[in-house]
Image (cartoon, rainbow, N blue to C red):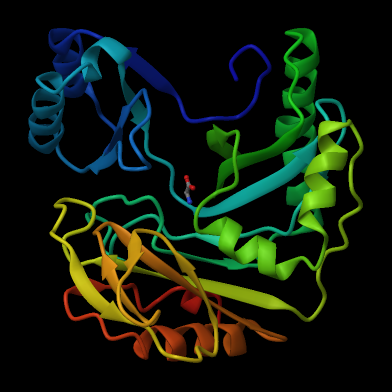
Length: 308
Ligand code: GLY
């Protein structure tokens, strides 16, 4: 990102605890962010508000397998709203999928732990054409240039996590996959033949994507009550026989007649409501999730609510 001038928060990478402790002790901007520089299942980011909290996490991470060796990032905290930008690309050109927003913290509380995602909705309509232009010019076009300059063959979906800050859009992360639970919003939202879309992309052909009009989808994740800090044992959950919304399975195993399941912890199912309005989609998702009998579980109650 530095090489291509792609806007992203300032970050320093450490593989030495003493040097990281020193950076924490001289930091003047709080809150700040500690990030694991490796795969962490979406859970390797902690927003820290004080030096003592930062030092505690840095020390905890420093004794965990490989975390320091992979690198720990000490990164500026960004204030703003997050969006998930998905594009389909043949490595040269790209088309946008509808914009989505996911909810990464376990609860709305700023100090709640990050998860893989507790819900999402789309399309996000509160960004202006000017912001889209900046994302194209400052992020996506340089990214395509990078793929070509480095001879990286990439045909498929790119998912860019972006924070909309007062300084403009800034990249939080790139993923070479769809977001989860953004995929559960995007796939039902777009009435296209996904098999043909992926095959065409593999052959270098970009599909045409028509942004859905008067269609919205809201996904709410039902997770085990210990998620993401603790993995609880298996528990029985019962799904409604004829659910109004869609139910995508995460960590379930069938037992019994098909509506009784053994949930194995973590993110158990994702429930999706669809409607011509966001409010209608949201109501459908919450009506459906409330019909699931699952005593030792949690879900966020505010997915898509801040847009009303
Ligand atoms: N929704 C966040 C992710 O898939 O990484």
